[in-house]
Length: 525
Image (cartoon, rainbow, N blue to C red; front, side, top):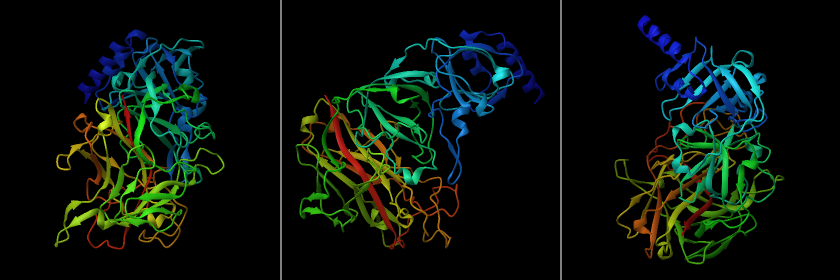
């Protein structure tokens, strides 16, 4: 232990003489996944890329159900070297000590601060910053260098720096930046909007509940442009929790510089019930069936309501589908809730699995999408879904399969695994939306129970690149299938593990409710 301490002190002394252009030497102070408190003086010139008045610097973490620790946002700041090559996240000792504005030039002494280095990605956080001790000087009017990149070009050294992402558009253009039912989420931390670039790469734009422009009553910009902000690496347990290695936090709505015109991305076919589109579905066998919340149709295929060519959506799980409420409203008055803009699939939980006579799972059921891809030869194409589990009743928000995978085929025999465009993963995790306080059967309580930490704030957004091998085919089939036998069961107290349930063939009385705000096949030439 004494030899290690001596070694660390030697490293600190050697680094204490470095200047601003060598601030990256801070990475030498501790191994990945480690931390160290600086006992010597490390002085550097930095430029501030955050703003103490922005409400979008950090999630306001839930310290208990219904209670937020909002001071994290004010305590958080980001600085980078003047050349923009590397950045640091600063955590001030108290919220009142952060008075840094975007463009301030600061001379910092990191003496006494805790330097933490994450393992993956490789990034530095400086904790315990004190305004008096660590900010030696602050001068406004500094220049932040322009750093433009495509999403695929981001590296770990971009984390905590200000970056402008090129050729960006919003994947789901219905609703607002914050597609949640805000009456149910006022005491929750934050959510995200899925963005993509012209290459098809995805990235989540992280937002907090405190952003006043999250829902303005205006339609979202439908064109492309740039998205600027601080590159972060954040996970949101409510969202998945896998949100990719890199995300972006804009300081203000002005950082979202998208055109109001058309995007080069077009929707070939889609199942989207946008606000005001009506309350009916067109089925292959049953014909037109209308009525919000009415009994649904099972064992039939649904025609697309977007696109000029016929396509089908269905499931072999026996679930019925009906028109249902969604969260893609743009107006402030109804706080994100709208009556007729989603598809709800309701069925027995056990029917998402195929069982043998001994009660073992031997196969799974799926959602299916089929469409003519002849037009897509030579294009870049994606499957995009916006979905959630459950509804505003806590008794209908459990026993759904947690893990899912997406695959596609041009012949129904050879299947290609699809990877999430924002995370690179072959699996996505489904979460349930919040509900009003209610007595939840099977929760272990006979009193009203609130949603816990794992409750999503709204529908999760995902996109998947389609392989070139299937583009140009007359019929492409995509299936979305449970990837494990893990199901969500009611947690008695939070924050216990969300992986506490396994499906059994005895769960015949349990129902799974899965809601789609949007399903679409997008392409770009």
